[in-house]
Length: 261
Image (cartoon, rainbow, N blue to C red; front, side, top):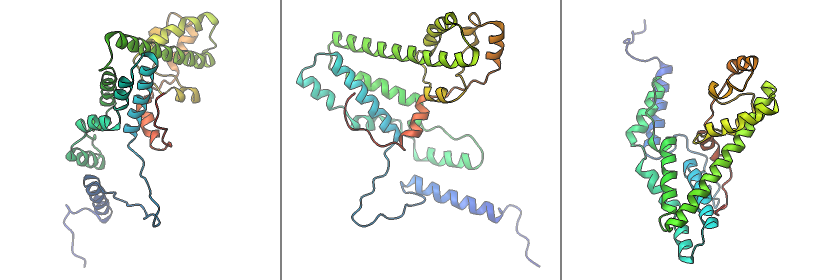
């Protein structure tokens, strides 16, 4: 007769999962890979993919810095000061909001036992957008009030153009779904452009799928017919965040050249 195991002991499968989790968490906390990659041949240097958040913020830096250079008449000293703002500054800001080691452990444990993971501040979209705002201010520190005004106006024009272009894309998608008239298209485009202001939607998703973002019914209720409103209410709406989606894809893309745009 086999001896009875105490009831509180986990079965072999669960015990194996717990040991595997402990191994993974230990590697994460101590900066080691839980499943180390096969060693590269001698003399071959293998570079691990960079942090997608760092890549995203560096792209923002390249675009904004290029806009400042195009908008303002800058001296050579001004240009050198702008070029001095780079990866080190971004990393410093990211480190200020980095999660503590116990945050990493708590996240893994929560996922294992079915709970809600603790959010990591460095990966929080709100935190990333805050760093973008700080970066914009940093780039304009050495500018005169007149130059800052020109840059802010250029940023506003750029964001307005983007909203208007995205509104045209969404109205074109709605045209396929609801057979819009010319008057309906012309009425919807400025309404949706205004609604898009300050939002982060991954537009490629809506050009590839038969979905719309969560557009408020108030935007279409005075434009659509009764039948169109009924179909609009029934259609599935999905809001796909651009920032979160791009962060997931950046680590799989080849790096861009280090230049301003």
